[in-house]
Length: 138
Picture 1 (cartoon, helix red, strand yellow):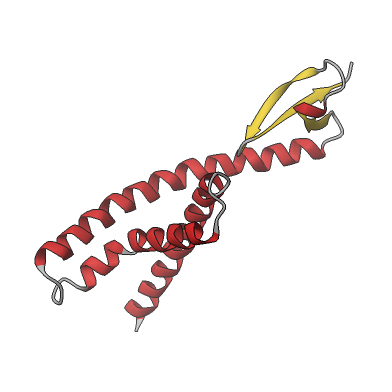
Picture 2 (cartoon, one colour):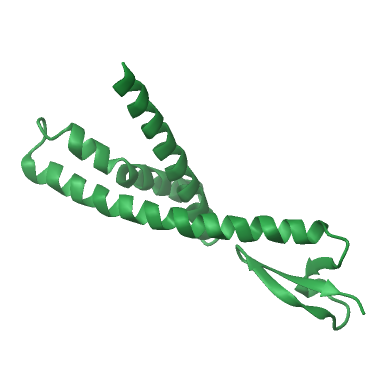
């Protein structure tokens, strides 16, 4: 019973992590191809690849050896990709969180660069395609 609970927790965490990575990937790709059939195809392919590791191991006895080995190989590479995405996306989310916290401080104003009326002292912050300028008035 304990194994079933542990396996269920691992699958749940892996599913949530994969969904988070897929959502960020779709936010990057979806702005170029916003059509619904492409979105469905993206999510179908994403989940096929994300679940290939577990599918390959669970179906070793039932599928042909070449297919299960191929699924396991794709799944192994996906797990490595997931690990590195976890690190990169966690760092980017921390930068995004820090940028939002900096925006709420009374030390300066944060506005999109395109709305800057004149030159200010400050630095650029780029988070997920939105460039912000931390401006400090003299």
